[in-house]
Amino acid sequence: MQTLLMKRTARQEFELLKQLLRNKNGVTNQEIMDSFNISLHNVYRIQKQLADNLSLVFEKNLVILSKKNGYLSIYIDKSLCTSYVIDLMSLYYLKISQQYHLSDALFYGSYTSVEALAQEVNLSLSHTYKILNKMNDSFEPFNLSIEFPAKRNRTNVVGDEKNVRMTMLYIYWTIYKGIHWPFYHAPKNFYELPFPIKSNLLSPSQKMRLSYFQTYTYWQILYRKEFVSLSKEFLDYLTIFEEISPVSFPDSIKEALHKNQVSDDVIQAEEYYFGFLTRFYIANIDSIEDKFLIVNNLIHSGLPLTTFATTLLNDFIAENCLILSEENFVLSYYQLIFNLLYIQFFGINVPFSQIENEKFPFCDPSIDLFDSKKEEFIQFAYEKLSFDLFPMISKSSSLVEYLAKILWFVYNSSSHQKKLKILIQYSKTIYGYDLIKNRLSNFFSKSAITFTYNMEEADIIISDSYEHTKSENEQAIVFYFEYPYDQDEWHKLLKSISQLLY
Image (cartoon, rainbow, N blue to C red; front, top):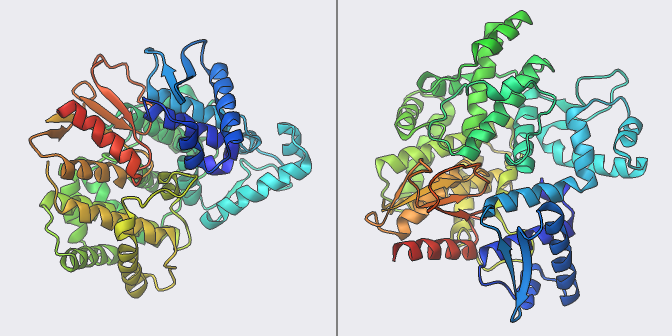
C-alpha cells in the first residue's frame, strides 16, 4: 500500500528517516546516494524536505535533523519512541497523497459516478480515472473492482465479501498501524467490546490490530449487511481451529444480527472466518499448547490439504536431512496450512502482498538472508504444488515464494536453540514472528536469551509497529525491525542484543 499510495519522493524521505533512526552515529551523503541510487543534488533535496516535514508533524525541537563532521543524524526527544515517530511519519506521507484522499473517500462513502467522486476529493476527472485504474489493477487479482452503479450502493468496492474482508483488513493496518482510528463512522462501542477470540498473548499493537478487525467486521455485517459465503470444504478446515480455540461474537452483536433476521449458520460462518483472518494476519492468537492440539487434529482429519501438508513437510525434512523438535514441527505445519488454505480458497493468482513489504524498496541490496536458498526452495515448493494440487500455478507466483519462505523458516528451525528477555511483534506476516524468534535462537545460546509475551518483563522489544505502551518498564530497549531478509537490519539487531548481553 505504501507503493500504491505514497509518492516515490515521499517514500525516499521516509526510508531516509528510518535509516537515520537505525544508525545512531549518522550517515554520510555518499551512503545515502548509494542506498537510494540518487544524485548528490537529490540527497540535499530529500534532507531538506525531511527536515521541513518533521517540523510540521512534531512540535519544535522534538525531532531534529543535524549534520556534524559530514554525518547526518537525527535527535528524538525522550518523550517519543522510535516506532511512534516512524509510524506517524508513514501516515503523514500517505495522507498528503492524492491517492490516499481518493481511497479514503471510496472506502467510507458511496458514489454513483466517477464525476461525483472527483468533485468530492477535488481532483480533475482525468486524474481521478488514472488513480482508479491503478487501484483496479491492484484489486483485480483479488477479484475485486471499483464500480459506480447508477443506483447508490452501500460501497463502490465490489466483489466476494470474503475477498473484500481479506483485502481491506490488510489495507487498513498497513496505512494506519494503530496510530489513527480510521473507523469514525462506526459506533464507539465496537471498539470497546471484548475481543471475540483469545488475545492474552498479544502485544499492544496486535491488540489494536484486533480492534481494527472486529470493528470493520461488525460494521460490514451490521450496517452494510455484507456477509461472507464460505464453501463446505473451507468450513471443514476452519472447524478444526474452532473446536480448539473458538471465536464467539459478543451477545450484543449476535442479538443485533438476530434482529436483522440473520441466521445462526451465517453468524457461525462469520465467526469462523473472523478466526481465520486473525490467525492469518496476527501471530500468537493461538498458544503453543493450542497449536499442538490444532495441528494434531489437522493431521488426523484426512482432509486433502492436511494430508498434502504432512507429506510436503516430511519430504522437505528428509531431503534436507533436518532434525526438528516437536514444537518446531508443529509451528512449521501451522504456518504451512495457512499458505495452502490461502491458495486453495482464494486462488492461485491472488498474490501475497505482504512479502513485498519485507524488502528494502530502492537499491538492490547485497544478497539477503533468504537468497542463499531461494531458488532451491522455490523449485521444491513449485514442484510439490504444481504436481499434486495446483497444476496451473506459476513458478513466479508470490504464493510459491511465500511457501519457500516458510520452508526457509523450517530449515532455520532445525538447529533451534532456546536469558535476555525478548518480546517480538511482527505484523506483516504471521510466520515473521517465528522466523525472527528462531533466527535469534540459532544465533544466541539458550543460556543467553529467552522469549516473553509480557512487555513489563522484556529487556528488548523487537517490533515493526508503535506499541501504544504506557509500560513502567523504562529499561526496555525498543528496536524497530521491518525487513527480516535484510542483512544490515539483522546486523544492527544482533549487535544491539550482543551489547546488552556482553
